Amino acid sequence: MSWQRYLAYFCTCMTSGVSIAQSSDAEPVFMLGQGALSCEQLLNYTSENGSPNDLVPWIYGFWSGINVVRGSSDDGDVSLAGPLVDPAALQSWIAASCELDLERKIYSVAMEAYFELSR
Image (cartoon, helix red, strand yellow):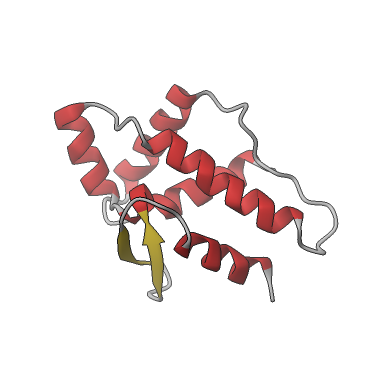
């Protein structure tokens, strides 16, 4: 089984509420917690209440799951994203990325950030 399939399984195991999110390729993804929110929902919440306190910890947990799956794969050389990312810079990056596509889901933005940082 590929690491992508393990990642999809991991996404079903996250905590904090359940939702079905629509991925960019139109296949439903079972997503839990902050990752199931759309960018529009996140930006609306942020404009009314400030940044949610649980967003960055959710992203770090999501990234940890990706690291576990990728680190246990047989792909050989794998660069993993780590905790050296400034939380405020991460939130700014997420917000800027969300401004580009309000319908995009947070898990998708978090995954893009992960792969940008793990290059």
